[in-house]
Image (cartoon, rainbow, N blue to C red):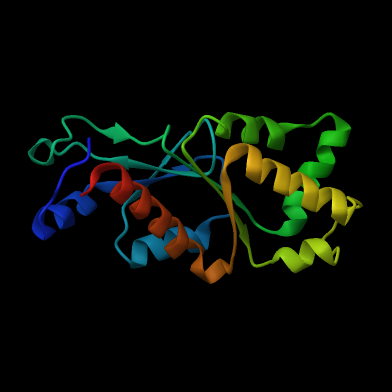
Length: 179
């Protein structure tokens, strides 16, 4: 599906790019504000896996005869903090393994991203989170899932999260269909 687009056609293609926002993601106000402010098109949709995805709206003149979803190519999971992720991991011990089911679904998706707001790896190592989860176990579990899923893990300041999601989507689009 790779094609070469002129600059004009590429701009047109980007105008058909829509970021998908999972309907269950309730804490994304700043992200949606960033999208709106920067004229990034988005829409809510129930996503099977992840919090954000990508689609190209139908534009036959550029080779997209129907709306094209990149759900097998891209999955972005966002966590509000290291504490939220630690809580998700801790819940597995209480028979609530939603996070691992989510990560298992991500295994077959080409590009996986875990974006963690505001915190950093030091917060895990220094046990700067609200959970009794052992920091070594937490770090090892995170590294295991990173390797197993070929997952990219980024710690992103909240104010830059919208930009980061947009750039990941744009990069996926570029690598899948351009030049």
